[in-house]
Length: 203
Image (cartoon, rainbow, N blue to C red):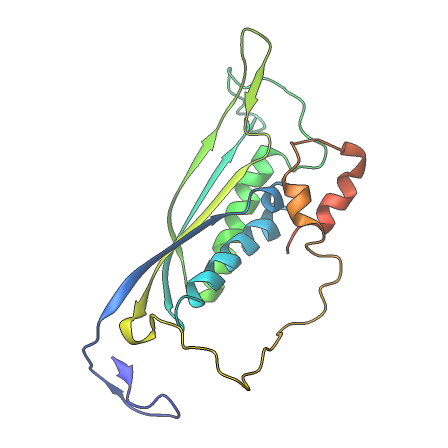
């Protein structure tokens, strides 16, 4: 069913058209580690933007969210294999990431009409016999989504002389400053500058 007119109110009519499936995916690891709820929100939001920006516009369908963190150590439910390794001072706890990030991704997707229908969660932290530590100190936040795009909108038009380039949005404040450099650091590196990491998070 589609509106019979794209330029004003109109009745819906049954039509036949060729559409293509879309799959977009990205990770938002560092922002989710520093600020789990807004970090995961913008992970979902950025991927939704990519879906809509395909061709000349597409439709979202269903979302996938997944998380990998260190040992959760749920209070009152600690497991025998979960040791008490120190955490990076600039990152949230694995338990907070697992709960708050999941809430953030679902919150953004639901507001946009793309419910999270699938995903996975993994936790791991272990000290090897040689003393080396293996753990998801910097978490993984994986966001994916299925959508569709009509064939007639699958290709962008050619730019023409006289077209405007428009920037949409308000002031950025201290949001997303130095995100690329900050996200490339090892977990806990430059702990004395941890306060600056929050400024690097898109939120």
